[in-house]
Image (cartoon, rainbow over all chains, first blue to last red):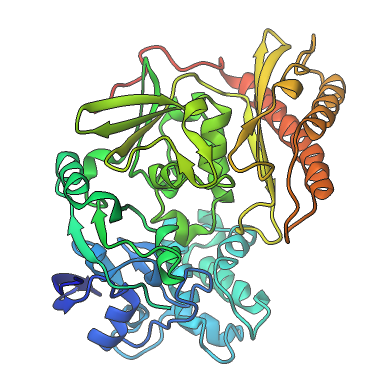
Length: 163
Length: 309
């Protein structure tokens, strides 16, 4: 049983062909098969959010999806935020607002926030708080993460464009 | 932990999925969004020999309203319901999009599906409560075609439904509009499974309360309706003061009617006290929603509501 499957994954705009066991989770395929180790893996059962990536533009837990299920879908990982090696505005905002300390939760937090701001560019602090609650951080106490996301949202979507 | 090994089959159509289920027998599990099944497999509480992936069946995705009510394709995600802007859905069933924020967290709702949640049959799941509250019809497809299962006959007990092993849940249908309804719950942290959840739907006609429905999760091994409390949902006005008293009486009756168990999340007495608080809260929220709704439009599905495209 458990015959390996050939799957085509589109990650950060690049197609990859992989031969994986069906039980290979998306996060393990990203890290072990594609060596995209920016995405972290914590609890492996959908609670901590460290493995959050974008699937078709929406935040999703990469430990709660098998790689074989991801065929035909667009996956974006934290590596997509700085293709030229320079931090994007959200990442810089995390630096500026002390939105990270040990950094373990950071890739998941960044992708969660990117997904939120893509869908709701004018998200207010309460919306940001509710969404950030999806992921665990044991260092910052969350306030500074919310600050970082809120500052980035305000810079991307100035007050006059907010409804 | 990593899930145990299994064989993977991707269904190309509903018929293909049914064929695979018949061929593989009882050891196969259907996977849709996987947001409940995958954690169970990671803990090895579930070790299916085969997974039949129906995630790619686009024909099971989407919401539409017609003369038979609101149809929700089984693979529609919670997030699709949450962000639905169809005026016919928002007019008839505003409680559905409004309740979605109770389901886990955003990254769960983007993959998790309505049908998956109902078929999983967790007594605390919001969709199990909403379908119970609103007398939904669960549409199952098997080798002999489709059959409609009233929700009253669907949830049989602890993670047990009337769905047969070789059937697929293809649609959840809400036959009647419920413009005055609300769901609320209490969990230790937002996004956790609720300890107790409550939902109320009110029948308001010409400014008076003519009846309603109350459903509870977390007090039995399946969601329950509380007819003893529903019988008290009458009042000659929709004035907040009088309705407050009505909801308080209904909440007391609901707390007296249920017989919850004790577990590590709360004693039976604690759950009864949550029932009292949450029924009252959901009742007030349903009536507030009603006043907001009645201010700007009639509480009914617009004539000529659109058919499925």
